[in-house]
Length: 440
Image (cartoon, rainbow, N blue to C red; front, side):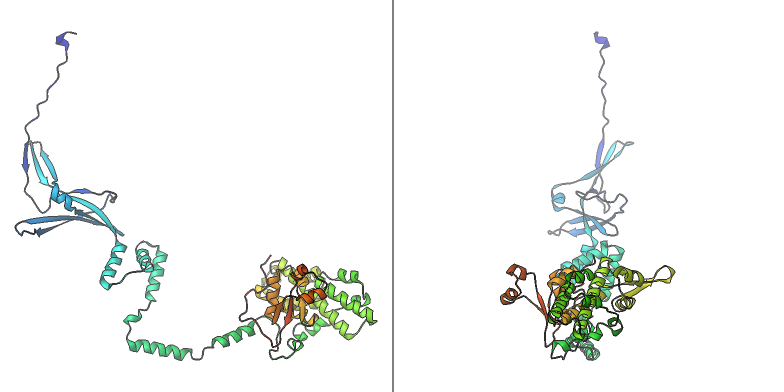
């Protein structure tokens, strides 16, 4: 390649640039950094300048600050001592017309941010000389960052808070005397306990009775009109026939006791009698109550019309009406104005407690709970709780007792006996669902 064809490097001659230093002013340009902080792009910043005298009192020094604020956060830019002592920062302004660069001293500021809620809390601490606990700190944050609902709750709490330390002694004395005056007629704890006992859904009880048979009255549990429609003639005619008894009731508790009564009557040659009829009627009604209890449990407390229940359980109309009247309540009217019935948890407990008292009467105030537990499909703790509510103590069988009953020790552990205690004692407080169990 010939030398004339070689490309020649073009040389650029830089013009002479004159550098000057601008005089110091109170509003210099500022170099700012924000390590780890992102400033809002439209955040307005306000500059501040303060002149201080150095320790030698011969020179003056300017301090610069930038401040910006949002609704919740303050942003502040300040000079760091290590930057102002060992470094100098300048901003050059180039003027192409005169080829001059004017250098302006530019302080370097580092931005930090402060949460307003924290700052307010710190001012409260400094002003009162107190240390805020965790609850107060959370309240301060909630006032600034909480939702409208949370802030409303905080405001309501503060409006209702009373600072006793700010009250005059006469005011507190007056308040105390007014409270004592207004509460002097309030019932005591013992009186409240007695009222709760009176409100428990158990049959009317004679708390002063000296014999178990005087505690409860049969007429308070089974009205006379229902008692009169209890027919036990088929049991009395088939005395001693266990098959006839088992086919006429679904209750194991009832079937066992009816069979024993009829066997004893057959052994003594007495096929009837007022005492036998009374006992059989009592067991008949217990069987009906067990069926009604299971019926309402299976439907989760919702009952059909009386006519449907009568057909489903095979009960007399008088008995169905009586059970609905005492152990169910109307909720609303269905189509055609037909009433809808339901058994609430409280009424379910009431049904169970009335049943427990009838079982005590049938077993002469001491009941083996095993068969009743099976009939009702309950846990032993549930059925024992029901009997305790009506005044019973629940005990285990002693060795002598279960051997006399021809039970093994393993069998005896599954059996408990409820005994009506005299003097009568009830649990200290009624349970909401003492033995009603959960809806199935």
